[in-house]
Image (tube, rainbow over all chains, first blue to last red; front, side, top):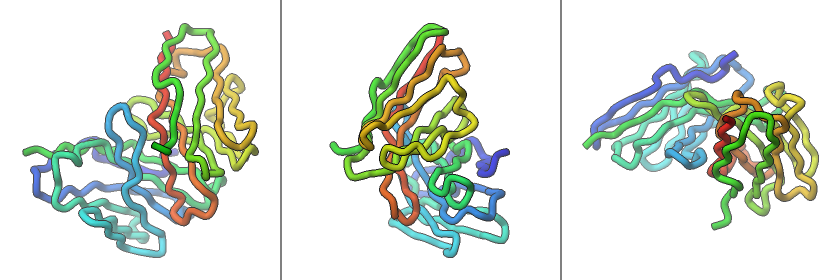
Length: 114
Length: 115
């Protein structure tokens, strides 16, 4: 039962353009959604989060949008930079048994080209 | 650097051997988690400690797996009688009670290869 889904395994974007990474979820009890970035041979690094009572959260070049009715969220990176090339994981937490565990999607590999 | 540390970073073992991994969380964090990540998948929750108490174990955690956090600081994850299916990246994360978004800080992971 994949409660958090990232249907695009990879994405290629030119430097300076917008990167949009998508995530869908099935469990309406999630109360926070988080995005993590992972480089090879490193652990995931927190990027940005959003509460389920919000529809947008912005932090510098990163903006996360949440559409609760569609159970969909997206991460926008503007402008994209070569250093953004990594695997991005969408994660959710909330009242799912263990209140604090994270449920992750399968990740989207972003490549930012010159 | 006061981030989450894990030891060893890599472990190669033969099927049937026991292995133990260590995680040192960020010092003021009372919550500690273990996750497992296999190729092409996101991290999957294994178990969770609040201070020294193990509050939940995933059904992924078979009887061959045991985790401890004896003094509420570092934690160990032991796998007995390893199987090839145990090959994965084992990630440790920590956070503090009351962190609003439940942001967790991850260590670099221990990559286990079972031959």
